[in-house]
Length: 601
Image 1 (cartoon, rainbow, N blue to C red):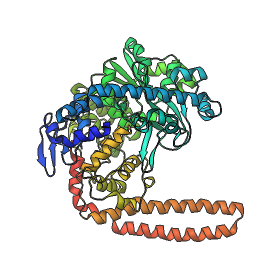
Image 2: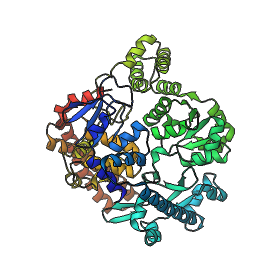
Image 3: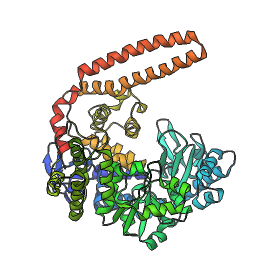
Image 4: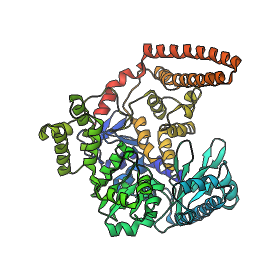
């Protein structure tokens, strides 16, 4: 039985409510159960568990997922450790002897493919584009071998053809090297510079691939028997000794940041492979150092995902500081432009993470105006409540009080209070930048099973959705029809290494927003999220084509395009008028419950 089937068998036999009840006191709430979240200070029960869907979600801190994800987080286990424990409980055969044999087999696959990618890079013709990219970033040919760098050639089946007969398609799937699509399997990594990810023994266990253009810019291997992104740090086997010696780690975001700093002699540097740091990564750091210096890009360090990662580190007992540099700099560019000394200075002068957060707030919101002060207090509330240390909470309150010229006691009361009532729930938890949108309506309808993909897919494609939501839509488009479709999607996202989207998917599946009329809600959402934007994109394309036809002097084409433009402009105007007239009536009756969800936690 494949690992995916084992996991599904575990979840089919498991009572999620009973599992969670071992750690959280739950009470019945409609079709779900509610309790106080075990992952943050939860003054009002905001933690929901739905046994039928096999999912849980906290509407206070935004964490969510399935049974395995819950056990991983609550017990600080790896994916395979959690799966093994639940397999024993449910009687599913997940024997260690078989796993050991499969791990050895997967290591052989990954090692062979890593050598294949390295060979592609060494080929001056085939690897020309990747060679040029690496050289432009300061990585010379000797460093390619030192760090195991490679290149995945263009094409859908290079790895499949090269290794299919040797290892078999199923083994390549298990290693995360192939993806299963509607028309069969195809290579996961195509036309990308390859950065192998190593275990602590220096063996390759997974890959990260950087695209030259298009999205996603970086693509990681999915979760496998060998690799769980949430419990690995890029470059740790190179940095471990230096981290212990220094007593602190420098945490950067990407692969090239790690390699540039290592080449410059800063060897206590590891990469989180994204800004959404996990508890598993924090536990890994906590076994080696006492302090972590965050050195993300300036524009991402203050983002919601990065801030939540800092809170996880601090709540795990680590001191956390944030390196500061000019807005147009990142660790890689800082070292290449100004040398290793500039980065060492930035690490030495790094600010405590809560002060960095307050500085970024004051930069974005004017502390001299009433509106600015209100915005700062509103945004800081989730940050304050996400910190478990009472002395640190008091310091945060004093810092904000000083910035806003307000009494510290009053600020502390405001920060500890329940959030003000909002018109609509956030995208998927505190700090989310995006508000609930028509796209969110569609995903909620789909993940709750109110609407099937066949109905949405008749009108829309995954490309019609924003890039941050598209992987969820792609999973839905390939999902089997099942009452637990949302659980299937969560598992699929985890397999693809998209842990940051698991929270979002569980939010859509369990969000307490009710639709008064599902058919009307579906039609409205399709109009707002798909048809209207598609018309506007088409009109913009025609505008560009008209300019090109005029520049070329092709007046017949210009006349035809102008007629098309007028017709599309009328359709856009009609759609805009419909939007204004109709509004989003489909979920009006569920609005109060949506507001309650926004208040929770």
